Length: 165
Image (cartoon, rainbow, N blue to C red; front, side, top):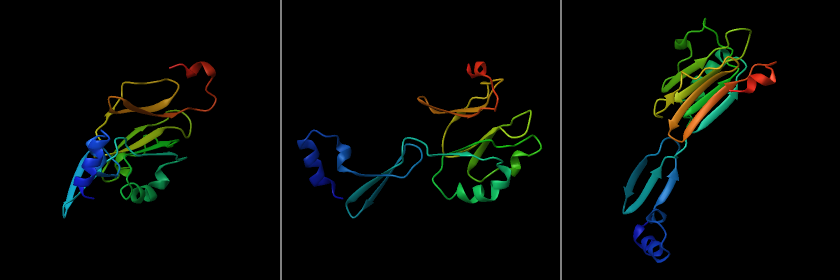
């Protein structure tokens, strides 16, 4: 796409200059890659929001073979799992996937429950380990000042008064 003709059209309608450029969303953090081929300028703009997968795993560990192939081969920034069914006997090294950090909060009593997350190494985020609840298992992450994500496991039979945070 040539810029010269499009710039004149943009200036005529007082539109921002970005309308003169071809923008292609490719997922991930906010970055631009500019490619100049024979006077054609294309900006590949990564999306401003991380891409998410959310799954009720009902036991994550037996699904590791599929996840090891799925996550690195798809544009996934955050993979969140409820009902991970993990416990302290399953080491983090058994759950690791190249290119991702893993975070977990196991259910302490009873079978099942828990939450787990994979976050791409390419996505800057802050985990909030100081947020605890006696009623829920959750993981909190802030990806930028105005984007905070919480992955929550709500145990069955929790009385209504436990919904207060």
